[in-house]
Length: 237
Image (cartoon, rainbow, N blue to C red; front, side, top):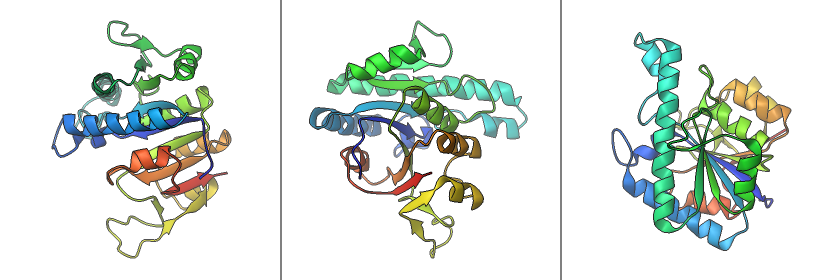
C-alpha cells in the first residue's frame, strides 16, 4: 500500500459498543488507544478521527419512531461528542496527545472546529478527534468524515466496517458475495454498493480523495492498515 502521511479514520459509533448492547465499552477504547499509540510511536503519520454516535443515539431511527428529524439529528451529534471525549480519555491514559474539535461551540468540553488549528495540531503530532458531524441535520457522519478529510488535506480516508472490504452484495446475507480489491468511485455509485451514503462518495470522488475500506472487527487491523499493510478494498477515481 502506498505510504500516506495524513490520514483520517472514520469509526462508527457501533464500534464503541464492543461486547455491549448499548453505550461505550472501556475495553474496546483501551485496545484502540493502544493500537494508535503503537502506530504513532513507530511511524510518522498524522491522524485525525471522525466518530459516529449510533451506540448512544441515532437520529434517523428516532425520526422513524415519530421524533422530529432535525431534533433527532442534533441529539445524534451530541452523542458523537460523548464518544469523542471517551476516546480522548482513553488516549490520555496511554500517553497519546489528542484534541477534540466539534462542529458547534461547546468550549467547556472541546475546541470548535477551526481548519488551521486542526492542521497545526496534526503537525504537532496530536491526534485530532472531530465530533458533531457537519453541524447540520440530514448529513451523516460519513459525509462529515469526508468533509473534514478534504478540509485538512488528508492523503487518505480509512472507513472501518464490520466486513473485510467492499463486496458486490451484502456478504452477511449472501455467502457467494465477491470482495473487490480495487474499485472506482463511479462503480460504487453505479452499482449502489452503499459503502457510504452517496453524498460522501461523491464528495470523495470530486476531490480525488482515495479511500480504504477494511474490517475493524479483526483485532489489530487498525494498527495493520495504519502501518501500511495492504488489507481491505481501495476506492479511487
